[in-house]
Image 1 (cartoon, rainbow, N blue to C red):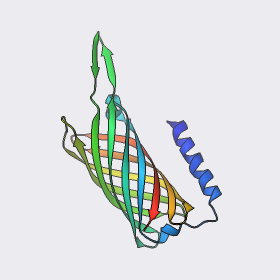
Image 2 (tube, rainbow, N blue to C red):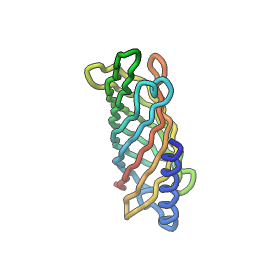
Image 3 (cartoon, rainbow, N blue to C red):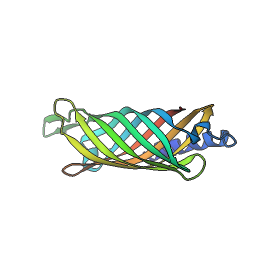
Image 4 (cartoon, rainbow, N blue to C red):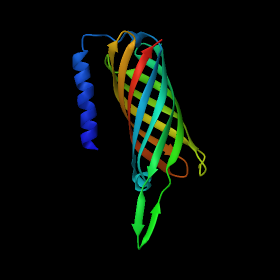
Length: 179
């Protein structure tokens, strides 16, 4: 896990160094981002599930200098772990969720941001367990690669509260398009 986060930071840092002189043209306006999401469950949630993979669509609109409103919808599917105890084999079923989030993104420096979101995680499938309140603080970097286009890397802690808390470390790699 540490190696994955270190690799993520290295790639983001190299991208920043390569684009340090370029200002993101989409920074000043609204943008849409399409991304891939990866989730690494922690605690009791991590005892039952290996990892999650999915995608998300993100919308940003400026509301003040360096401050954007952020709305996001996506899908995450978690694969269940298999257990073999006392000759019995059991596998947790895979589960899917549709996280719906809203919040704000504040640019700490030209390309670095802190973001906070709240919303709902809606379970899908036959054994759906309803809807949970979610909260997700994150840090990330967004750097331009073309006119009105930027690459966005973010890392977050995401917690889902319903009869206890399920949590994970999430990574998102996205391509943002200025509108």
